[in-house]
Image 1 (cartoon, rainbow, N blue to C red):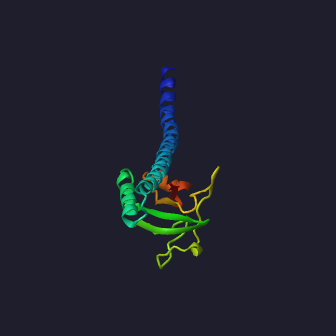
Image 2 (image 1 turned 90 degrees about the vertical axis):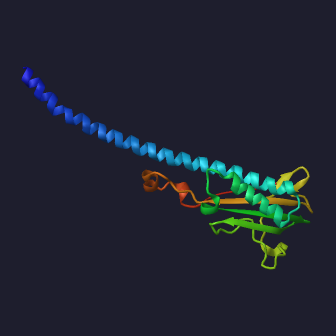
Image 3 (image 1 turned 180 degrees about the horizontal axis):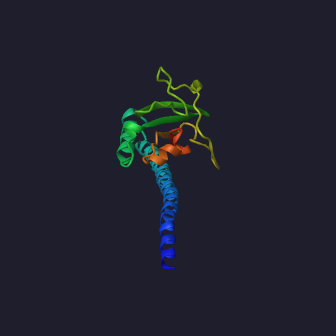
Length: 188
């Protein structure tokens, strides 16, 4: 009787190990997938904050000149400590003036390794930023009308960032957020 019980326990000892291996592999895959997904969400939140801060910095200068926009870009890149905007991203800051309902880009600067075009429009080759240059500002309806008001300047900060997963499971799954660069825009 005792001999029979010992042989049954020997036969079942490997079964528990194999079952644990399958469960552990699934749990590890889920854990690494969650790590990369949470990193992507965290990166997206950092980009949202950086875009808002860049537009705010440019608006606080109020001048719209190249030095003010350059300082705003430098502040964004300096504040992006967990991210490397210079090697994996791009910052575009534009000064847009509402000239009686026609939006004109008066100044625009870009810095970073990525080479994406601004989604609001590009400064003309002549540097004039004429109304026909295809400027598309988001219209915000207020009691007083659209923002910015006629003859006012809005500062637009756009940020692109190419997120890369760090775990092998994240690269294997290729999270859908990583297929295109993360993008955010803010304006003041």
